[in-house]
Length: 153
Image 1 (cartoon, rainbow, N blue to C red):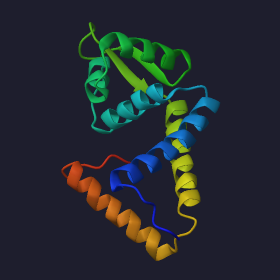
Image 2 (cartoon, rainbow, N blue to C red; image 1 turned 135 degrees about the vertical axis):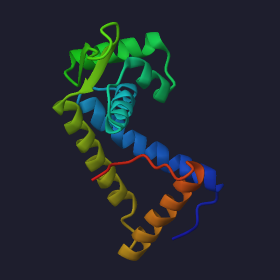
Image 3 (tube, rainbow, N blue to C red; image 1 turned 60 degrees about the vertical axis):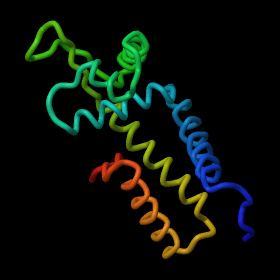
Image 4 (spheres, one colour; image 1 turned 120 degrees about the horizontal axis):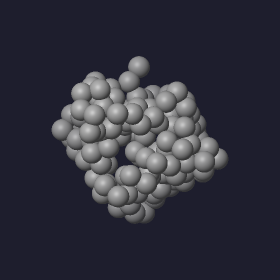
């Protein structure tokens, strides 16, 4: 196989865009946008930390404005991906909770990711795939200070 003649950053960008296209197409089939999915991913991450999750928590993690997140959460609630309830600790606040439907969507997204990786890595043997994943983990550790976002078992 011939080496692609482009900078390494461009190679990562090409792969990222291809993964996004696959995920976005699958999300569209489920009636959800990439922005809405990003909010659900943020909610999932915050729920794993324990305690109540508020709209402000999601806004902070996704770097979204209050009006934008208000609309995103309204749509997610209408579609059955989240529940919005009064806070148990402060009735002035609302807590956001993911539903089983959101958790299934998250699992489906990981399956899509795995299938996409299989498609893109079709020319690699098992040792090369394992090495690639190890190298990517190391790189993520460098850029994220050791913090990786991903599926926990």
